[in-house]
Length: 319
Image (cartoon, rainbow, N blue to C red; front, side, top):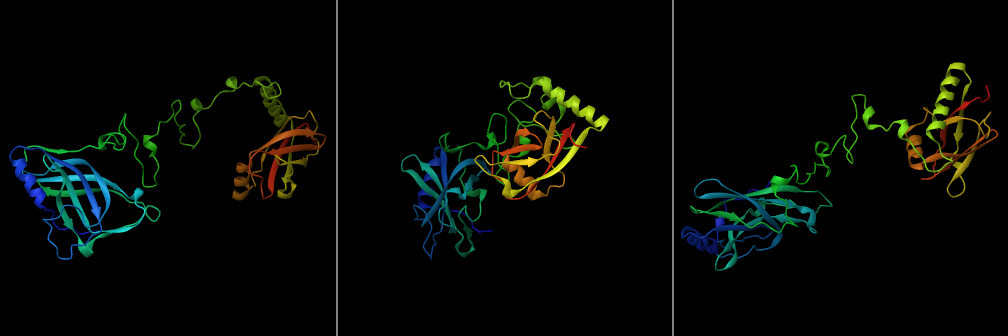
């Protein structure tokens, strides 16, 4: 951590203090960071940093006592294209006659910190500078335009903006849960609650060739009947990585007992490995045709490069 000595007022800063004692408003405008070295030169005559590398907008000023204020601003290295050694810090203020001036300055010398580019390491932190204000009756700050500045009070607050966690993501507690256009919530079993899952009565399709509530119910009834009577057959097959062809990629599996009118349920077998499950998710596979002893699967996503274990429950199939 950088070890900066007490901030020293420049000649311009001392002149502004005289005006402040006469009733002028002390307005801090920005904090600047640089990599310059003093090499023995005095601080008082400085009018700018020796080698400025970054500017930090002032977003808060806290009066510590009758003669000292703490000026703070949020620094991010998101716009730093070249890393630098942070050795010098300057606080700027608005002089009613001279315009913006370097009010106070400090230099850590060899005890500075290295600021890398964001590609190497992301750095986001508040910089606090304690500086003399000489009994100023009014201490103010310059707020940047609303399109570049977000007040601290609005971060993570209702009607404000979300904050980011250490991973650069919005914390879960700031995301709407269980609301329209929000996020679904999970129960203690890790599953969606019933109130957030659409019921079968709400399922509708405009394409007559697609399932309707009526034939979905028919399929469910047939499944129940088959489970009770033993007429449901489980067929295990493999969708070989080498078996996909065409665009979109498809392959036809041999399913004993399958007919053009068979009711069936198809999915990935529970024996699938992580690699196979991952490949299936990316593949977006769907059954697209059935016939005598055959079932065609079509891949709408990434064609799998591993064999996939497929399980078919066939109603009225071979026993």
